[in-house]
Length: 391
Ligand code: CTP
Ligand code: MG
Image (cartoon, rainbow, N blue to C red):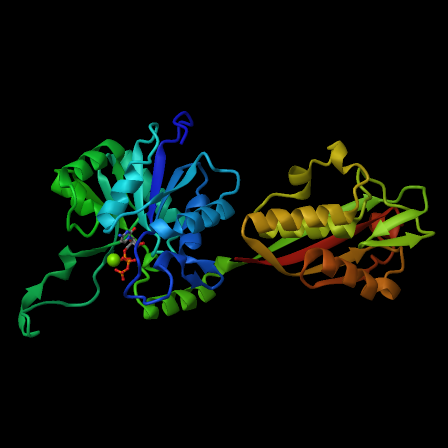
């Protein structure tokens, strides 16, 4: 691991447990949750931070290679920042193994359970910021809503505890790096159930910040099913985007539009082949995934794209989406212009575009009653709406 990247925060993702209570045939972090392993979901949340952090995944000895495949799928090309180490017999030992891999420039270490697979990116950012601001250990925690009873071994109630003074601790928990290392060195192997307890036992101050209900730990089959239900309801699992493109007619009779060649029709001018329908589709997809637009992603002045066909841009867009964990659900495009007469070729265009996108594309066409540049026959416009799903 290179030490000269000046990264100031590291996140240790502990994923080395066996998941006995879940009872799956794989270690818990490698169990599937709606198409992604718990580890992959945890990593995606971290990788969406708007600034770079070091990520150390701690995996069971037999699953280091699997963890690497997952990590580099989530963070392609980030081998300098993302690594996998072998865990220990207890969570405590696994965290210690992760700590040993933290690079020298790091000042803040966050420790996170891979089992809290739905933890939002904002919680990582909030914990990191709070550690930087206070220099304390930071624990995201939720108020306890149930009444609390102290009981004997038979379940007889001995007394009550004041729930107002209690919080349920989650992860990621964040700490100043040097103090956390000192605390782990002093603790040796221990029975502490979380990192804040190790840190506090060595004299470190720990403060809570508000946790998040969806950062719950997946422990049992019930929890895994609950995570499934929660996922279905997360609003940003589906995202919508809009794209508009306009091109003027040129002179040559070489029109490419909506993925089709139109013999005898005037071409659309532009740096590329001017396929406004294909370009609007790209912009809508990129916008839905929050990945910018066609101009910034493909460089309209880039000689690599001179005269490029719509297919080149659509395929490039789908690749960018896939790399960011998105897949198209459908796209709807409307072409605005007097020419070409679109409806006879609608089915053919839809079939071509659907194949390029890998999801249904519907195309409609309209005119503007003689008004504006489309009405005067100077060019065409296309407006696309795309729906994408976060995988
Ligand atoms: N963990 C770890 N190394 C261990 C034990 C646990 O890295 N030796 C990790 C788990 O992978 C999990 C987190 O610590 O992400 C919280 O532990 P827990 O939910 O108890 O997971 P498991 O120990 O895997 O589950 P169980 O206790 O049911 O076996
Ligand atoms: Mg455990």
